[in-house]
Amino acid sequence: MKLVVAIIKPFKIDDVRDALAGVGIQGMTVSEVKGFGRQKGHSELYRGAEYNVDFMPKLKLEVAVADGLLDQTVEVITSSADNGKIGDGKIFVLDLEQVIRIRTGESGDEAL
Image (cartoon, rainbow, N blue to C red):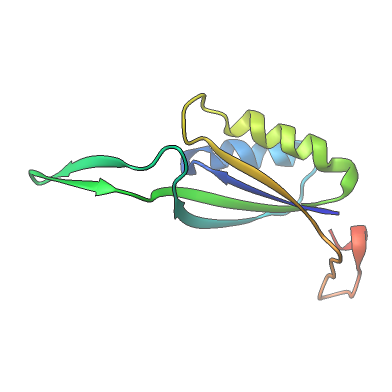
């Protein structure tokens, strides 16, 4: 089992969610986060004063998947979150040792 963590632009979440549902992904966790990479923020003008926005608003999407769905999940997130511009995000893939569904006690792939 794998944990796929994707950092994406906020306006892409509906596209990503719909695309993941289309391949059978049944659940995910989404958090509002801030950060920067090569994008390094930008300057904005507010009431005549210029200020720097160092941390850009992003969404962190976490999806637990069976090993067989990993490649398809990564491809779906990549294609649906791509805007063709700097700051589109990153995808991280982590190993999951164990998953347990609290309500039923199921574990492993059955708990996903």
